[in-house]
Image 1 (cartoon, rainbow, N blue to C red):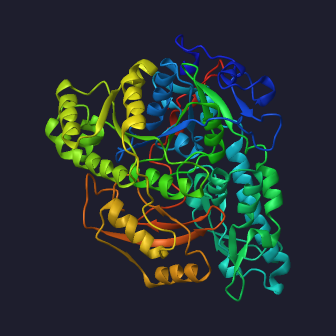
Image 2: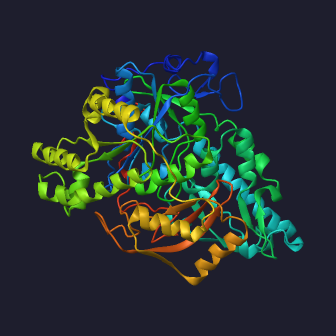
Image 3: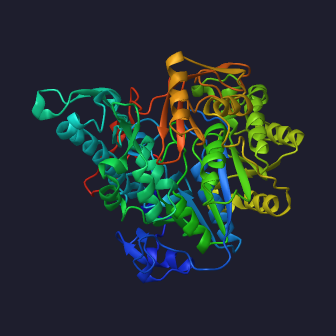
Length: 559
């Protein structure tokens, strides 16, 4: 039986959830009884009422185990705890990607008593947003190839320098690199290209960083399509793509509203990965939530070296969001032991020594958040296997760091299990100093920005890249992309670019393997180590356990 159909769950009509935010029935476009898009008078992008805006809390984590450490669960439980305290609170989360759902990680709707529902709907097709984003990315690629087919003689695009790629919302390693256009002139011009997973596509990044429909269209028009034979950049506006792409995205651009198991509002909209993109839900959804709530809790992908750094240096930098009033850094006993040398199958056994050794990883993440000058609370996400001795050791280590800390048992107890965490978050936001600053100035050269992140955030001693990659950076500087922030794509399983280098590596060399401008999104992606923009399925994918019963109920989707 799914969580939303369990005896403990009573799903409210989505209109009741909207009413908690001051929204009326006319402000909603219903997708069944429990899902809706917010339209506020059928406006192109919903607008929050004038008045005081809420305060933002951002949830990040220490370096995770392969199973994840429960950021989404913590977000949901914290919102439910705030609601229990009489505060008007809402969650702002990313939409799940079908890649992880059918791959290794599973769904992304929380766990236990801290979930957003209807979970299976959210994890699968939801309201069709990711399909629309995939279609817009592929339309751009198709228009580029169409220009090559009909107008190659006029020199608008050099067939050897087309940079736009297609997308699919699935882990499919065989599509990473393909040769298109084979079979003769009627099939187009043969060339090397490939697919990215939709969550890593530029249209996804543009979708999540645009502030309104006009900004969305302008950003789509600035997407780099390739270069002409003279070496000058060619953008999507040159092939008249942005209008049709915006048409595909118009309805998807409206934020989605669902609910938690305890009936708190949750906006779920957009879904870029943080290991290969910027890792935050849409600015439109977050701003709408801030206009309708006292408190909004959002998450950034993976650990603070990835999602949090990109949130500060890319998302906040757009000027459309203020820095968060507080940051929650999620830790688990099992992750500490994992970084302390315990193998994944053995993490359930008590091992205080390994916990103490692995605490160095959490210590590094505490330092990363403090680098940006925002109030911080460490949340210990409780697991049934955590022993009293391990929790006591964790408490002592946090005390030595002089960091706010709370035990979170939202998985087992829902909002009630997050009350201590909520109290610490409110205290941090109200009383702790906030001196936010970016990590680097935009006028710093691109390579220097990467060096700054590598040294100050990851703990690297230096960066290295092949001469041809360095020349690509020089070309980007020359073409006017040097003033953009950088988005580093690397493994989520290590502070370094080597996923086997656990705990707290220092003085390593970060290897930059490629670079790709995301001019529409407004950043430059630097790929490091073995990271790829199209993941592959694991040996035993989650898809093998997913099924549909005779009653039509989907089973086997975890999270």
